[in-house]
Length: 137
Image 1 (cartoon, rainbow, N blue to C red):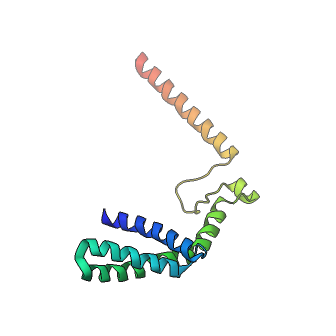
Image 2 (image 1 turned 120 degrees about the vertical axis):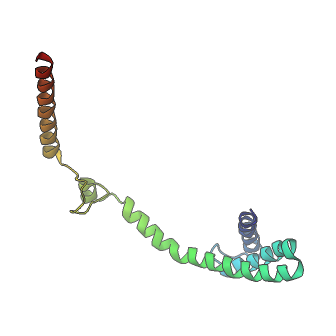
Image 3 (image 1 turned 90 degrees about the vertical axis):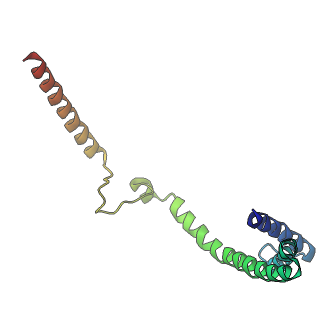
């Protein structure tokens, strides 16, 4: 529970520090200051002065590392999601998910679907005819 509260407080503290310093949303120094303050507050509640020092350092480092990673990964994740969700004409034809050739799941075109339905109807007719013959004898 404390972890969730800590990350919530750090997020709010980062917004407060960003507004006070008048910096942009990706400022890592604001994140470090907010992590230091949040860690000191929670550490003081958990373990006194030694806990405050320990927690403030941990939150400053871990929070800033998480923010740095998020800033660096955001463009890559955006490009990845756009590539998945893009609507190219070739993707409309093949669908958005292309299965490998060795996959047992086959995507059928209209001719293959029609042939499959014809086979299924033929098998159904044979079964139904076989059941009628068994009932008569």
